[in-house]
Length: 66
Image 1: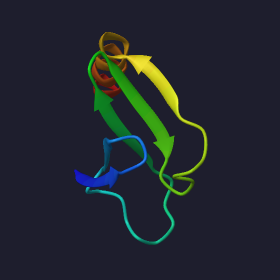
Image 2: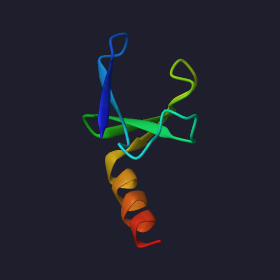
Image 3: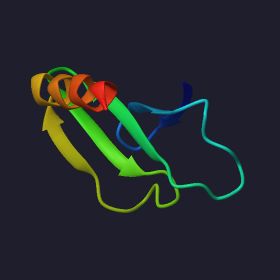
Image 4: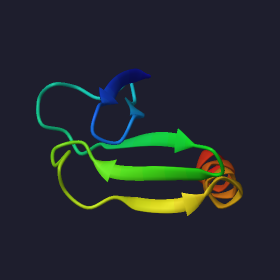
């Protein structure tokens, strides 16, 4: 994962190392306390979806199963 610091919010955003610099579809995530924040990597100043850490963990497990 590559991390980018967001100085305005103090979050460290991570993007998959599988993401290419060729305009692929990608999201970034940042964890803070009991919340995970998700945003479009191409619109860093755009909207952010925030979910509880437990919900994010369930989503990741489900996605990993295919």
